[in-house]
Amino acid sequence: MKAITKTARAAALLAAAAFAAAALAACATGAPAAFDEGDPSVPILAEWVLEDDSGMGGTSTIAMAETEEGGMPAWRFTGELTRAFEWGYVTFGFEDFDEETLELFGKASAVSFMVRGDGQQYVLQLLTSVVQDYGHFFFNFGTVAGEAVRVTAPMRAFFQPAWAASVGWFNAATMTGMRWTNHDDINPGSYDLTIWDVRLYVPGE
Image (tube, rainbow, N blue to C red):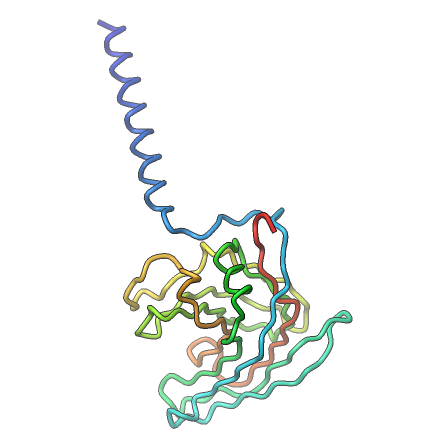
């Protein structure tokens, strides 16, 4: 009798393990590659696109200055966030990636970049054409005032806000851009962020 009980229990445990494995596989379907620090990295760059809330009646400002960090080209973004527009904001990033870069995003496990900030919080967004309510894929990161810090954002760590209509995992096939943003509910007032050495971790590259 005890042998039967043990056998039944073993069968139940195996069935549960198989179910869990199937569930994990289902969840991972369409998911970006898992990040590994050993993945090779590839530098990426495109023309910078800047936007503030002036088109919405806001008065937030943004300015970009080309500079240098550790012998590498860098870009410093400064300005002021105001609440003249209810959801004051500024954004700075890339919109016109070439086909080769978009293919790299499709295989990437993480986005990585260097920043020198002001101690405030910022957001990196991946934009896709399937999102219609501004609820793009977010990755929040902090800065240390005056210090150079590398930020690494695993592709699986990007998320849509709770209020957005979910479109599943980020899909590079529908990507329209990547941008850093500063929103007045994060950093009201002045801001100062320098970015350089933007890279993608791409397994197998």
